Image 1 (cartoon, rainbow, N blue to C red):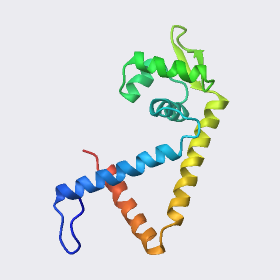
Image 2: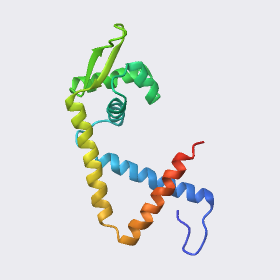
Image 3: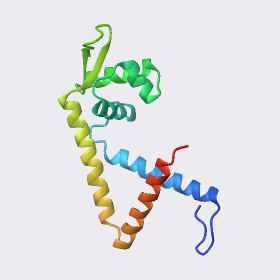
Image 4: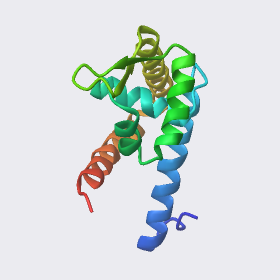
Length: 149
């Protein structure tokens, strides 16, 4: 899909190539950093709870743009596995807050460490000039992400 050397690709081709490359890297990072075999939804919930603390099912569903019933099923699995804890909301007894257990925190730590270890090993295989190019591209990708809509 890349343009032949010495030619300029169209913006559409560049977008397709960048999307493909980022998608492939993200899939690889997810695969390499999943020592506990968690689903993408479960991982997203653990990450959200780690950052925000206790949250209701409805708040988590809104944050992840899914239906409360689907979030309830995900939370039930995480609770069964001992990764989240259900507690009454101290300000509204009708509500239930979910938060990470020590095992949930450890699952997040293991996942982060596995991702970092894989990426360190992958980047160690690059030549110094390739690594410089990658880091320059990372800065540009970050700028694209911060640009908003």
